[in-house]
Length: 317
Image (cartoon, rainbow, N blue to C red; front, side, top):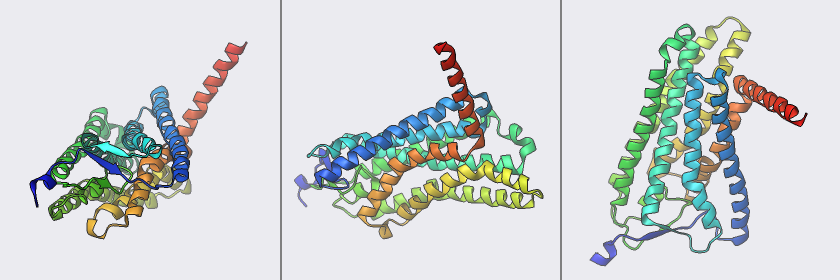
């Protein structure tokens, strides 16, 4: 292979979801609306938690972090995707592609660790309620949140450096909606077995380890709930975990399906649709799940809306 073919490419071309113009315009409108709903919904959740003192608990501290991660993850992918839906030359500079991979991969990892931390919080709340405030004190919550952010970021930094050290030769067409790690690795003109092993190992560490912790937490939670004598007590304990459990099932499910075995991964179209799910649908669904299925959040909304209604009435008179 000659030296010229081993030079770094200056930019990549993202092929996206469709080359049909009408389809792209329709997707632009749909994705723009959903992105705006994502930003607004998560911003309102964070604002509500800040304003209502009843929500100043560990669970909602972690939910604030989760909302920030969701908005940041969507922002790392969706704005660039929206621009590409309206232009013909769908190029992304080398540095921008590396930055996008770092932020999207890092924020994805942070979310998985956060969900494990939130599972532990729910475990303590259900299995050891009398000591909940002692165990889940402010210092521990802060350390757990920092651990989530640092672990996801370090893994992403390592993966990004390894991936972009690969010689891409003249390959610059990424058959994806963004600079997703497997799609970028496929461009390499050398054997990528070691990279795929690194992806699998990091997936096990940053995905399966938190998943196992979540699983163990819910085994203990379910065991404790089944021991509760009263039906009302069981319902109350279940509702304590319902929102988090719903998000866990949605979030972990397809990621395990996609990343644990790169060689037997789904088709390129399936990978694109999975990325759309995580970049657009999940950030929209999370605030809805925590609002609709959570009595405390619904109560806080009603209180806030009542205060705003009263303030509006006073101003009108």
